[in-house]
Image (tube, rainbow, N blue to C red; front, side, top):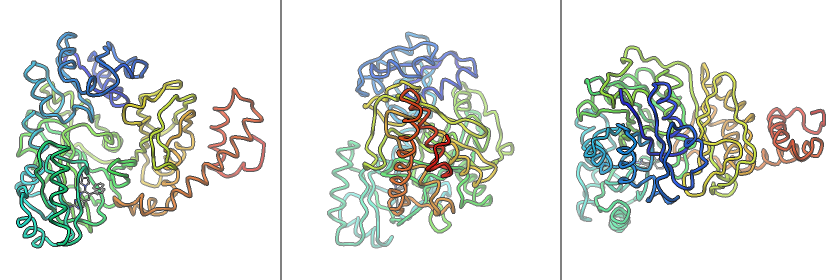
Length: 495
Ligand code: MV4
């Protein structure tokens, strides 16, 4: 087993990884920026070292400094979490050169997966369905026109070095293709350093469904079923669940086995996610993410597998602790990402001091967070406060539990997207599981629902804080939230 792990990340995921380390009795080292001095993960760690200023390029992205800290402090491995250096193949190569293990795939596999055209070809060769499109990069307009008319409009042009939706252009018909090609190439060059692009058939309103996989150095590879991540906005996921409301056991086994076969064929060795678009009953491969993902807890809740511990086992050269036959999905899990952002102001970030913080608890609740009451959410990074994850014996119980948990959650001092999640949990399409990647923009009524919710809470909060005095404001907010949920105590002052 690894002797000491440095966590090259911050926030909730740093805490998540350290929790696994603590259970495995492996000491953990935090590295942090000046903006994160007071963060929970710094206090949680066995040792913590400041590695630079708030600006990520000088701290969380500072390859040299991070590797130097690992060597100096005797860490034999680095866990990169998600974002920052997690899928940086140069970082993977530099860690290896320094004799430190990276908890993730090799730099070769990382580079292969980072090249979206290469990844598409690998998957197609292994029999995984891919979106109809090109198997090489498109350079000139004639080639583009020929390809597009073959696959049929609308098409989507994507940067090969990209991922996550950046720089993609949808082209409805032949007219706009030449200009769109030029534009996408320019964006690709500016963003990813190479102007390679490829073309796929555009699927109008697909679901986003992804499979969790694990592969060790002994040739064992398994999948842990799928996650449905369709509720997202501008490529930021907001709600994820497992299993997907539309995937049957037969489809799950079929796709799971295909995916496992494909990752075996490339010598993949770590946890990963294979992303698909899903439309009219069919799956289409999109890309592979060679990292732990934000939404991994929903898979942990339904399978009982601790994915981070498995990552650490894999990096230690140990075999996976479970076989495919032992994996069973139990019940349903839903995750809401709780962000410091204002759903009534175009989801603009709202960093600041959490003057009051009370997280929900009870049966079937998991809260992964990197904050505490009195903590100030810094403005420099992603504004996620926590992930609220619930488990239920079926999807209905999971939704009922999520509603209950959201109404217990008290965060004072900054606006959050909790009212957004409350509105979605009441949305009839969401309840029926009828979601696609355009769900949020289609459900324009959500904004009105959020306004109503906030007005109700405001009214009750005002009444209660008059009665209970300033010191009890946080408690009053909690009470108002609960009351507005049940709509029973409105207009009464009995509470
Ligand atoms: C697509 C698509 C429709 N057709 N590809 C955006 C993120 C990146 N991983 C892939 N993306 C898409 N690729 C084809 N051929 C629609 C999207 C897309 C999307 C995908 C997953 C989740 C949310 C999305 C939101 C808008 C567009």
